[in-house]
Length: 197
Image (cartoon, rainbow, N blue to C red):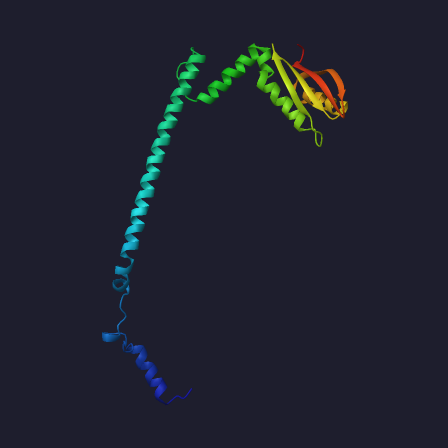
């Protein structure tokens, strides 16, 4: 700007010696902690107390759940030893139980079809797949691995689709024993048994 003047001289002086600190004495910045701490002290104490209470409650809850899990594990082991007395040490109760059930299924062809609950699961799946048709089970009879159902369906075609779905997807043999018209619906009897039985 102007080579000879006050600005270049002041600039060299400000680099060599920093300026005067005006924030000192009565004008110094003060911490507001001392002013606000008495106001927030009660709230902070309540927050700490609440945190300790919640943490203590969670610790008690976790220890209670751990005791329940240990009790359930012990009950499961007792049940497995009761059902399968030849079993020694149990490491994974669920895997052991499933393998024992699979081996029982290989020994007993009736159990291989899933038994009552397995067959009922296949029937429910077949009825659920009938989109838009309302078929209901009126009665269930299960003996010696053979399930007999009385089903109310909108028409014979719906009843046949249920039979077909059970036979195709479950490996079970499903037969329509009878189909009688009942107003605008059909009452049918289905017999479901393991294939080859």
